[in-house]
Length: 352
Image (tube, rainbow, N blue to C red; front, side, top):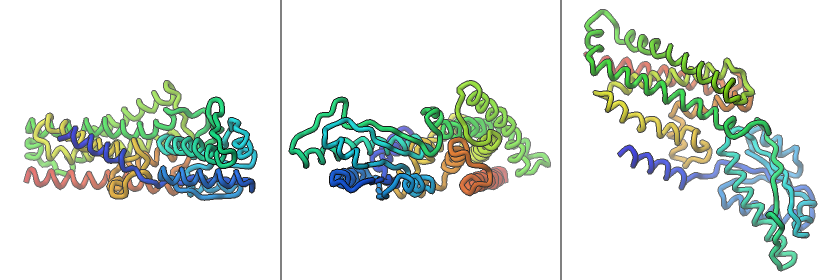
């Protein structure tokens, strides 16, 4: 059932991604072809579930992107319209947030479709003929609000990759380790001593937590000094966020071990926990594009807040006390604490 559930979840999300993204159209000029091109582009973007908002100057569009009210913008002016009417290949100014590879890719695909169909409609309306510009009707001149030209695909993907790898590795270790304690009856012998159940859970957390620290340090050293991953924010804050992610996964693993009677059962549990985190937590798909019901589910997953916080720090350069980062960090700590409490309660039921 695990592979079936995985395929169903991924397939459903891919087939039912919704809007949630907004593109600002900068319409500079009053030539009829400029206005018509913008209108055709709006229709095309709406058909791709991209909302639009019109502004009259580039500065206003950039302000919308900075405030989060738009995810990108495109400039359509009279020079572009006249070039379309002349059947010439055009360079289009595009601005993107640059904080999510999935969001940027989706907007670029939608823009590519819009900028292929809209100019053709305008040219056909003016001449009644089909234009065939050499090499295609346009090319992008793209700028990014965050990141920059030096940021490649790895730089944009790495915050999500870092969160998921930290979560995956520590969850696996904690789940198998705690399950083995039960399977070998180590837990029963410990509980026969004066050791409290909460002390056992916290001791397990500290023991595996030391390994989590080593793993996080190793991963960050490789990322920064070997892969040369760009990061705008503070490296110490990146370490803290990754460590909190690992601690949350560690506590979740201790809790889940109560439901596994062997290491084999524990390993079978992993996909059921990890796949939803991967698909719905912002690693594979932008949170804004998820179907509404699954978007609600995603907000109850620790990966959602870890990925978002790491992106805010590594790509946007935000600090600990920026609203988004401190809020996400607080939620991550709450998740970790919640799983500690669950671990103690399930342990109490099991050995009572």
